[in-house]
Length: 130
Image (cartoon, rainbow, N blue to C red; front, top):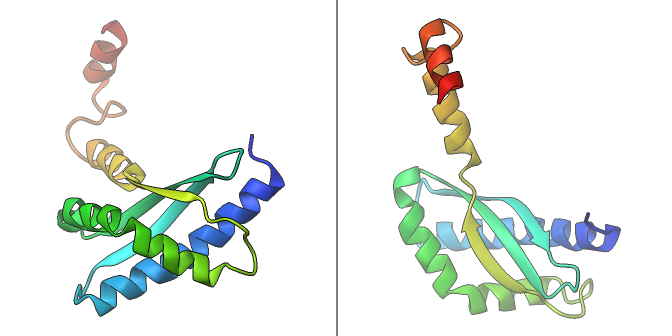
């Protein structure tokens, strides 16, 4: 369970990271790309922050994640300049892709399609047995 301090730092990092990444994307010539920070988890000792990103469109994900990871020191420096009055030490940043939207989309597609277990009871019986 996260402490109040962890939650507070995660909120600060989430807000500032979203601004930094979106500005970097727009100034870097990436038009039509939306980068949002969906969640930030900070470890108990406040030394590592795991940042979960949602990137739209999905075809840009791998390249952008590689670019973000390679520019982590620059991003961390920019973030430390923004939060210098709020944080003493900037945690190490680890970036991951948040694929929960794709998972939800897959569930919606299966419910709308022919693989809907609510409409096709045979599929439900097959899933219970396996």
